[in-house]
Length: 206
Image (cartoon, rainbow, N blue to C red):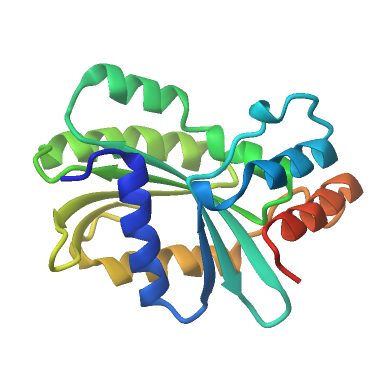
């Protein structure tokens, strides 16, 4: 249905922005220029900008006091191939690194293609969700399966098994989490606070 994760990210960005008025800007990975990433890498103390990973999506959520900067890591599963699933499981902690960059919220989203069996999606989602929940990792985990792109319907598996839901319902779910959760390093870590200021400058936010 989608060629790759970038195509899913473009679709998700368009959908999310149309669903919730609390969502301001939505930046795709390619929207952050090489020059800006190099500037951010310098502020982060990285000698090689290539080591500074970019989230698949950056969500800027409006709240009553400030912008909430959310980094979203997206994994797209086109088939039930075990190799791909094992790799994604090994990498599920990737969103946590964005807290060191100064993001307020880290979000992991697993999107499964419609042809994958529900039982496989549920079993995999339970395994990942258990690690996040039992270890109390400061990241949100959302697991959804595409049901109907044209009608904007998804099947939700995590944080709750809800069956068929509208995409906007999931969008509200994500935004709700962003408004309620914060980087555990902020505001006490002054270095991370400075990085957050640099991050806002890179994104062109006041």
